[in-house]
Image (cartoon, rainbow, N blue to C red; front, side, top):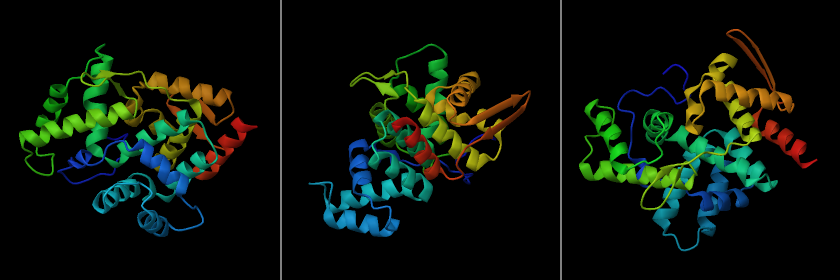
Length: 269
């Protein structure tokens, strides 16, 4: 996978962490609302745990949640700062939710690759239904290839598949309760631009950003990504230049939090 940002990891690469780590959107919003950007990550996490802002959750569950939040959003300080800034400065929820989904998927290879390797091809083939057994087949293939942390039992395979479905439903990738269906994902142009900025910082190549398979998390083929870039360019959110295979991307701000501030000011003015 040459166009992915997920860190290269010696096999096995797939874990069952999704069993404990659902979308947690409401709790994430609560955490972002309580975050103090003037304080370091450790101090914020310690205060949140001490104050038990998550209500009746047990101490063990609070520790699990905070570990998940740190891994998803705060191991890279710029991601956490950007999300806090967007939430506390009242960015539309339509901006924030796709970012929570994208960075959660970046942190969990199992969730990410279930979308890219199983759900996206199914969507391309014109199917909308997504049964648990369909995802289980992909997971069993990973097990047979030695790509999971252990030789998962059938019960673990089922739990991983079902929790992935529930998480993707909460993020808006799927719809339905008992029966799940692939949903059209709404990706606002500012959220697209923020993801593009992050990808550019990792890949340092406009062509690689354009062709990154991570856009498939939003069911976007390359021509769909290019349409987004053209729209963002026309809205003066970024500069996009294409000449054959040469793609140049330019952003007005160097860091992701500063770019988020630029977008907020543009849309709130």
